[in-house]
Length: 122
Image 1 (tube, rainbow, N blue to C red):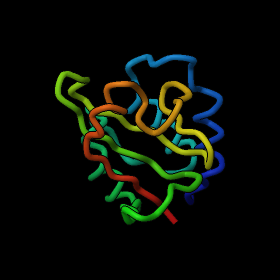
Image 2: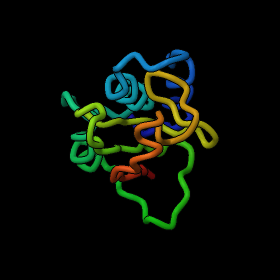
Image 3: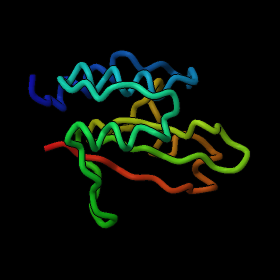
């Protein structure tokens, strides 16, 4: 089965809650799976970069804007969730286990700006 980013983001939209459930990696991984790619499983969101890369997702350049189907892996920040964060973009909105206000997914990420990588599969 080939990658269908539209199906992946549609899955993310339908399954996202109104607030975080602490399951960003699981929800994002399942959206990717719904889009036709089994990236495997690891516990922490911060560790999904290698699995995404192994499944054909490639980091985008720092000057590139995210597009539909892109996935962000954000590292933890001091005092925040040690698992980091993961989400998928629908072209307008970032989704994980909830509909996010922006890529940062919360005030701690927004103020700390920890390192992150956005991955894209063509």
